[in-house]
Length: 188
Length: 204
Image (spheres, rainbow over the protein chains, first blue to last red):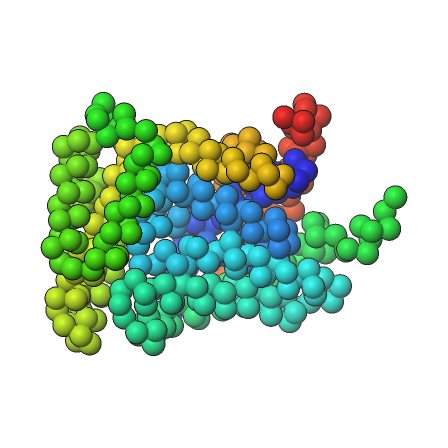
């Protein structure tokens, strides 16, 4: 991996940390305010692509694990990796990976709709597919109960997926980092 | 940047990071394979005593962590009280507290640098597939430097937008902030990567 790619990976790990510092956005008709942190998951995949996006979130988890308070609300350390909601953390690199795979696949026809598909599948689908069974296993509660409890986060996550899709399309136009495979191949 | 490490001169602080992590893993395996109240309660008592006495940590460190997961404990106990029985709920809740506090004790008694060293050591076998463990340390160092930089650039963009007047709120404000921010920091990362290569980072 080139040092430049390593810098991109470090950048999106840092960006995810900074997104955790942003004040939570209160959404009316929602009991929990949404934090911008999972936006980092979708953005890392959508801007950097599968491999670098995956590594960026993995690096972010390393920062959390070594005891830096980079999670939303100044949390961090090893405790969050053994709590009931740890599954959501573990899902983040995978979420970025899947978002990145889809964005790479749809790169040539990336628009708001296709980008939204990528951010919803990777940033919401994968995250819940890992996080909800984890809660259920951890607390000995059936899957349905864990899923119902997580439903409150869906509206906020949908808002984030739309924001991430808008950003992904804008950044692709302004500063594309994922290059077209064909262009790469024909380069001397 | 403020870490969650609590500097003290104690037995637990002197214990190698790798040993503490191993104990944490074993503890996790035990409380999950033997899900009974005495085991969970014993683990919790042991962790608290170890943290306060062998680690000389202020009680506030443990209280803060306990408070952070209090919502979960209450929710789990309440759920089991309704769905199964109170004993299962209490066991699961106590187990959760024991694990979270044990992890908090390891974090509070181990320096960030020591934990990064463990990460590099654990990743050493990846050398076989072409990953250089030293690059992990470089990535961590870069990320730590980028956090204040990204925050600073975000502030600068926000100030510039405020200076031009108009105030946008909600999700739209986030888009208007993050697009220029991303372009700016992507350029920065690109430059940093090239600068590092020019100084021989690629061969290190």
